[in-house]
Image (cartoon, rainbow, N blue to C red; front, side, top):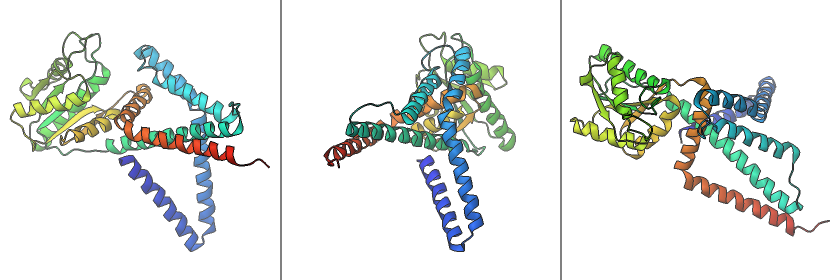
Length: 323
């Protein structure tokens, strides 16, 4: 919703600007605006058309650093999808009677446009949500876990989360002299030798956080459980609904984690930790897919409507008498 509102606001601002140019009859500004829109349109079109080059390059880098798993291959899969879309747009490979061709091409065009629109709004929402600067008055800082390296070590991605939480902890202590408790949330995976929460706690203690200011949640296996079980830890520690808290995760993950917290009626916003650039495209694709699944009923409805419209166009073309 955040991305939709922001983009609609920008569109409304553009329409207002066009109206002002029309009212004042300023042809110079009109020409400049038209050229800027054309330039941006051309850059976006070329960028989307050739984006598979960057996606393939990024896939190779991720494979070298993260392995050949499905989750590490998302940029490769999307790159293949871009190539197929380019073939569809530029070479028109569908050979069928005209009504059927019209229906298929219409549906595929709607799908491509809808995916691009929802991707853009998702990225906009991620960027806007990341511009959150929490007050230094927190009682609890929830650090969301991720996988351990070799089953027991905190890796770079998870380390960035913990370091961001520790940095906020120290800045709050220096600024307001208020101690927050850090909750390290993460259970033990099948390939892990200890719960993520335990490894995270030890990492924080090794980096100067007093053990008395740490709590461990060691049962969760996903973000939703991170939130639920950490809330139970807070209550067991004497906290309540009025306790002030934030959660810390990587910057690409704050939006979805924030949505889950809102759905669970947990009053906590996210503080984003930095993510290595090479990993960001893959991570953003994964978050987009996860958010897509979270709202699958809405998206399925839209796809059904697009299919119905495409079928209607095909039937209409079939019924129109040929000259």
